[in-house]
Amino acid sequence: MADSANFAQPPIPKFDCFHDHWEMLMENLLPSKKYWSLVETGIINALENPTLEQEKVEKDSKLCDLKVKNYLFQSIDITIMETILVKDSTKEIRDAMHKKYQGSTKAKRAQLQALRKEFEIHATKEGESIDEYFARTFSIANKMTSHGKKMDQTLVVEKIMRSLTNKFNYVVCSIEEINDLTTLFVDEFQSSLLV
Image (cartoon, rainbow, N blue to C red; front, side, top):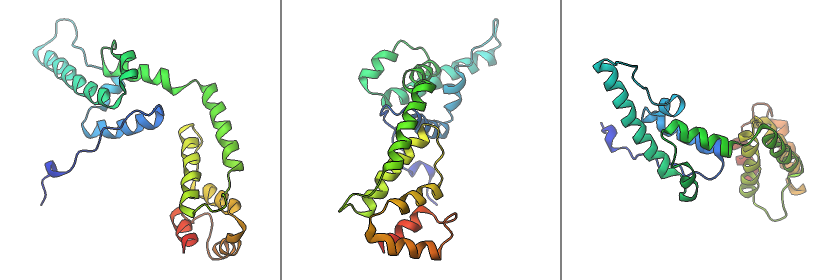
């Protein structure tokens, strides 16, 4: 049986100014290292007149915090890093990134409205392949999800069906006749169109 040390370590996700996406990737990476609690709650500080055990817990917590900072610094571009180097802990770094890049609720709502409009008018282009169109559609749907709008598969499948060029009318009608659209997965739908 293969030793777990032989598995490739996941790459550290690079911050691309999409805060929610980056934080989700980091949240998935850091728990595998048992460090995410430091990011959420901060370093465990010993009380006044600590016991030896409390001192050890604080020391271990600070050491883990340095390791997490290393992950964060590897994922953040130098121009952004310069603005957060003054932060003492990973929690402070995360909080600063959150404030800076999360955006206010109003701004997120405005961005979501723009994405909804883009999704509504979105259609295939002449000569565009099915794979390209699905990729463009999912790019918009994923951005909408990151801005708080849950995009279920049925909604995306129905949108794609409505917005395909006329050459797909027969195929779309056949798919609608054969399948229950509420249970049709996007991958199955894409496969049917490609065939």
